[in-house]
Length: 188
Image (cartoon, rainbow, N blue to C red; front, side, top):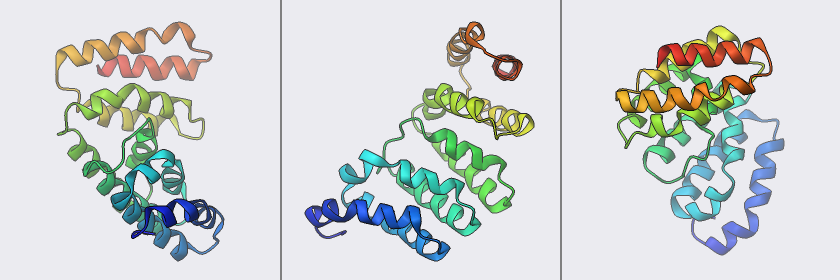
């Protein structure tokens, strides 16, 4: 599949189905690496549907999560895949129970922050995904947002983000959403 774009395109859905349905963690890890290799060779094919890769960040097996985080870190930082709002899934890894995963996520965002205001550009999308995740505890949410806010260094960017978030206060449906927005506003 890394040699022929045509063969890759014909069989990609089968590979993704195996990735989604396999009960073997080693198989899932190997498929994540293989898909990463294919993204380097034929990123236009993989880039169209990267959600299946990001879903492995929530895998029940820690080794699959680590492999996925490493693969996505490489692909994103090397510019092989474009992020389309899924960085919030990677941000959740900042509070993972596995210290290696949380440390790797910290390294990823530290590196990402060096690339053309990337954290600033995706902050609102990450905030939205994190705030909408009812399974994410409020304390974990706050730690993640606080870490991400440290990369917003320009006053101009902080003001722009604050204005975007302040506009959300009117649309808050519950106290938790309100608290999330006001917490982020306080940081900015």
